Length: 213
Length: 213
DNA sequence: TCACAAAATGGACAATCGTCCATTTAAATC
DNA sequence: GATTTAAATGGACGATTGTCCATTTTGTGA
Image (tube, rainbow over all chains, first blue to last red; front, side, top):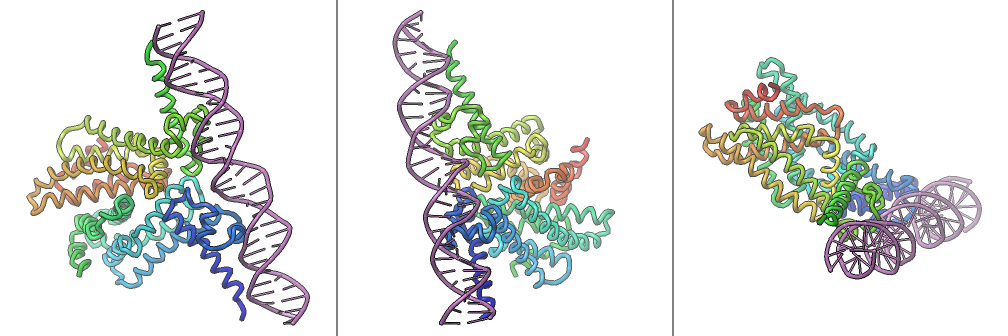
């Protein structure tokens, strides 16, 4: 039976990463110590140094892994819908506010890392390249929509709509962070689409009906 | 000369709080140790325990102080403008995105504390009560505006506009956090008003002109 | 089954953490 | 100027941090 060794090795690596994420979500970054991590992963103290060369690298890796999961989730959703601009936008908004993506654990992790982003180049770096891909996707969708309105500068409109929409979604995440129990997903979605409908009255007018079937 | 004693005492207390904020802004929460704080404040090790009973209390106090400053800044701005709903909204948006309030130091501090909010009740608590006041202010302004449109449910519209606007501003702060150097204040403002203009075409149509005189 | 090597262990280590208090400093009162 | 007392000092303290390596375990190939 070949590859068993590497399989275990990989499983342990993964365990460490997930132990970090669990700990960050539950106790915060400042209480996520080496002792805490190895206890959760049920591995020995030396493993962190062996697999990642040190705690900082492991934490960076965990942050990378976490953001990868977020974007993979969004991209997977896009596969399940049509190709019109409106459909893309609706799916991204729904996905970003869905239970699968916007939940207590993810929000805790995300904001914990954000808080450290400014002082940890590695954490800020990957967040950027990934973010650019999503932003581009949203922009293209809005650009297709904006062109249909025959406005003077459709790309400018699309740029603003992209910026505004992503900013509003960010803000909804903050709402959820601060009030996870009173947060209302449907309300958040309704508001985003109310703004979008105001900008593109011919496109997002039906979105409410589509969203709640 | 009476009160000199208390004056020094108060100055030292303040020094400690500001040392925490400086350190959090520059090095992050996890590197803000007792040694770091007293070195910046140029005070002795025992002062933290003497004045605040421990490091955690001092950090909580610093977070409270910082958020107090933010809201005081916003409220001060509101004193300098008219009383119409539109004027209030414009002033809050402008203020929230102004250099005086949205700058590298404040953003660093704000997000550092946010990252810890979930695991530190004290930090989450005061943030809420203050936030509620601002939210109420924005809501009242939008409610006055919405009523003029003769819509079916003006309060619902105002609620959504409030939620959406504050969310978008939050998102702009995140943009600034992640890209402080490429962030464009004017663009951020333009986008917020573009969304508002789409919702209230008779009110925020002139805002662009008002903003850049 | 045995020898080899990769992987995992767990404790030693110096460094740093936050707390606390015996001592010193200096403002306030007489 | 002497006395009182609140404020400030700075080091001792045990606990905890992350790193690292000598040792043990265990899968792999001969």
